[in-house]
Length: 93
Image (tube, rainbow, N blue to C red; front, side):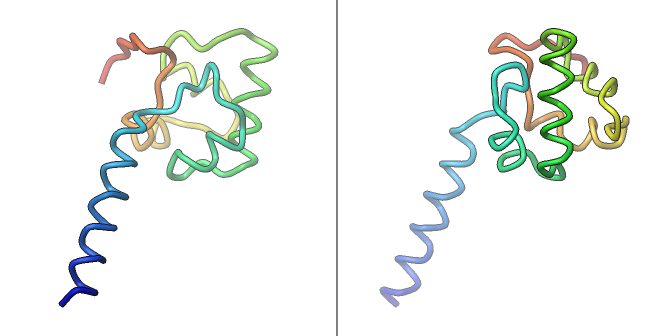
């Protein structure tokens, strides 16, 4: 019984931690942070996101990620809740 309670509390804390962390800002995060925290984005795509940003300046909307090779509409739809371009992101849903 105690094992189950400990497991439940641990899972609840883990869920809260993920939720509390909020979306990853692709204008400030490094590739490792993006790859670790955005589902479906591995290190190669994360590095491409950062390289594009460094070459072209900050993303204005989450939809601008489609300008990165290998990131299309389906990926953007999937990751939209997990990423932002600023703390005041007003991208279309």
